Image 1 (cartoon, rainbow over the protein chains, first blue to last red):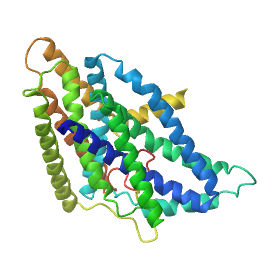
Image 2 (tube, chains in turn purple, green):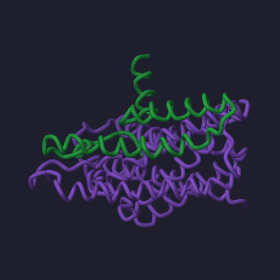
Image 3 (cartoon, chains in turn green, brown):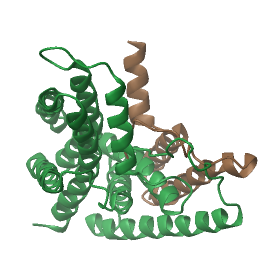
Image 4 (cartoon, rainbow over the protein chains, first blue to last red):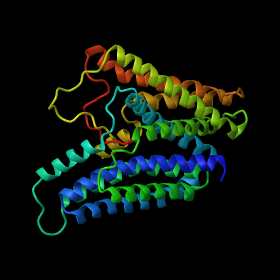
Length: 260
Length: 81
């Protein structure tokens, strides 16, 4: 496996694992509070929809001319990567609440319990919430899998890495039967953000007509540059936070920003 | 249709539209310079970190101005990432 293939597989695995953890929390909360079969049916329907979308969009992407593909893919990866990295930096610096799987689990379970009980047959609430959770989390992964895979001409490897991540999260989740609160989500998001930005910068510029000195050999330098900039930003924001600490909610106030 | 377009906008652009705009500018400048035959590879590595830094700083502005928690600290966001 080449360095580029390893980076591709690792980036897709981490991105998919993070999203799978978030989706797992919601599906688990709903399955335990409502009718489990409907929750699982919702999650399964979303996975099926994503698989169909991948089967349709994958060949369409790979049929694009290489320059157009790289520009499009680079731009998309950059936009996603910058968003991931921005959130990860703010969270790592303490300027934004960390993603708290246990709090989200409690919130989802409480909301589900407030809804009227379902009659016979499909529990529509459970189905809809789980479908939406898996579809929303999965859509971003789908874009990452397709863009990375199409650009490297290895959608199979990207799909394999994504499937491995989902299976790993499912296996872990079913083993502990609880939200996966100990998974270092923000560190993973930070790493994925750096990788997406590096690949996005490389492919985007190449698609726009630029020639990188040394070709693919410049990718590790891009990764290092972006990682250093991101770490410097964490330090900078931490210093600002220390100078003017954020207002915290009063005890007993509603759960804090458990953002996705 | 409007809801679909809004969902697509939210999905692609996310919390800070300036990030997407910065990407468009960086790649547009790269394309323009490359079209002249000059070396253009350096533009994106220069602009991308600058766009990121500006966006991170903007995430802090609400708190620094008002003392309120920065970056929608207590709001549940449906998007991933």
